[in-house]
Length: 258
Image (cartoon, one colour):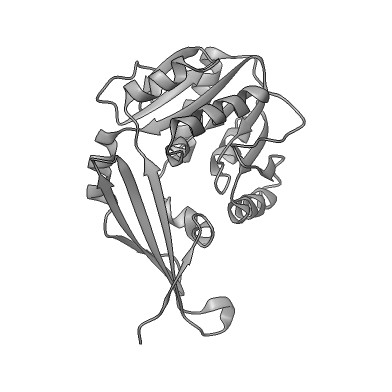
């Protein structure tokens, strides 16, 4: 019997299986890289704000280093709920909150704001990135830094070879299938997830959920131009996960602004 497909907003149903989808990501090494950037550019920083924190793995990994007080936020309540659950299991003191990064309403300021795993690529217009910069500026302390990364067209061309038609069984009742495509003309990378649940809440009912994620892919030149017109100064643009200068062939670029 064919199941009707229920379409859901990004990071709703996916939140329940996100850690399985991302199980190949080395978050601890990534957290060490963010720590290295902080130590290089703002070694006295202690209070961190993460935007688009997902299920909280990065924040929890950074907390393990023992240096930082962390507030971690995401716009999807389902993702924050998953993060809070993980935090509770390890008695974490990370403050997980639901916050739209285009409308940051927090009553404190931070030494560092960071936003990783190409979350900025979900912003499809330069005006939205400008709005993000303005919101981040409003919660940064004097001399505070903003760290974010984005993926480039070269990354998308390579990634679809690995991500397209990727399937995985999460548990006895849930599996997902991902279709990953890249429109080089429009520079839109689309990930479409089909999530099959064979026993919904123990009822024995089956569901097929579809979530579609569209990311705008920027070149190094484009992001540099947007940054130059902002109130921030670009301290460095790094290539991949090293403290080496980014270049036109970089797959992932990490920007450090002040």
